[in-house]
Length: 142
Image (spheres, rainbow, N blue to C red):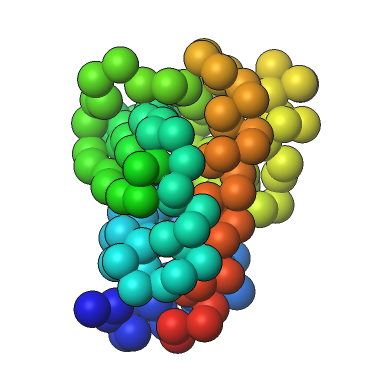
């Protein structure tokens, strides 16, 4: 069951550009995405893709998280992932700006500010689509 209070909180964080205030806010977004992946038909459909595992590492803090998406399932956790499909590395200021959609991740990558290791196509196509659909689903449930 989707925690509507959490969905509303995360939606407000995005609307008010508060997602970037604390890396822990990322975990709230990931948790609501995991919940929505069970109930939202459009997100379920977006997750019917090849399985990917993404790793995020903050270069200026002791904070890293991973997510796994595909084969109809979404999961996440703190720390290091085993054999990620891609890894993104940046300082929190930049990562927060990317997550709050103030900065385009591809532009940051092209400028050399965001390091992406692994399959760039997976990042831009699969991860980007799942994130877009998750944000839309969150808006429907909050």
